[in-house]
Image (cartoon, rainbow, N blue to C red; front, side, top):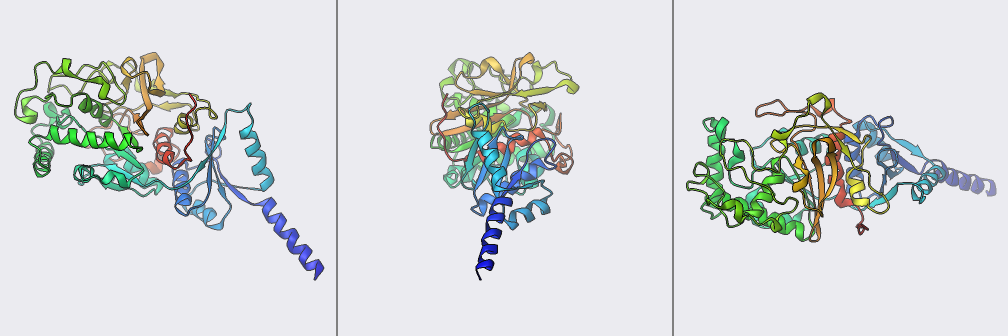
Length: 419
């Protein structure tokens, strides 16, 4: 009997010493599907399992408890993982906690509830975020103007803004697409929705939506925007109460002095920008760098900034990657003019030689926002009607990883930023 108890105690100690944790590595060599690794991590949070995000350790790896369900889920999804002993885990955590290492361990507490702001008729492949959420198997709900104006945002921890025009100018597609069936149909639908919601103009209705989103962030929400949803959002806020739309957009003339009436104090990220008055030019303002760029596709890259993991865990978290050099990609809003970004906004990714920021982050009230220029990280020039990106061909995409960093960001145990 004593011998049996001794054997059982030995087996119990051995199990706890030999295989207690799962490491999901996120470096280039150790992970074959970075994007689905985020999905496994989200799945574990949904199961109320404890997860640690190991910032700057092997590309921002994830540490999870060694349970059979997680191993099985990794195998099903094709995610690389390593089983660690208690001793090895302790060694890693000690290394990370060392003051000499630019690393940190962040506890992820719960799976954030995700909303994607997008028209109901859009397919998942119309937007990079919905594509990568679908590929990573991270659940989300789609909402649009009616839900936002009816205060549905309080139900969500994280909001993504679809490629959108909050100024009421229908994406400035007028010159090229004004006679196409899809443009005419979308304009009619937008006008009908504005009327249904009690607004005379689409621009007025979109401003109301932008103000609701602003309040959501100020109240503690997390907002992520890409492409034209970045600058058009700030433009709408700055132009509150000012008509900046030409007659083909809203039926009457714009305010002739609208540039001088912009209030930059109302914006999240941008200042001192000049609006593009010409309705035939596919551009909103001087914020965007698209027409100013002189960079060949083969050399178009942006660099992720290096932050202190222990002192600035938030930007460090948002920049986790297996490379600091990320391929550039175009969009209606490709990148941001650096000297038109407010001084309290962090630049997290930039092409310094071209004077442009690609990836920025800031605090607004109790909440946070991230703006990411460009439309699709794996489709360089993505145009209307282009086929969807097959993420099965890009499972280690550094550009898409930045999106998923933002998805997991609200799950982190809240830490006060120290700088």
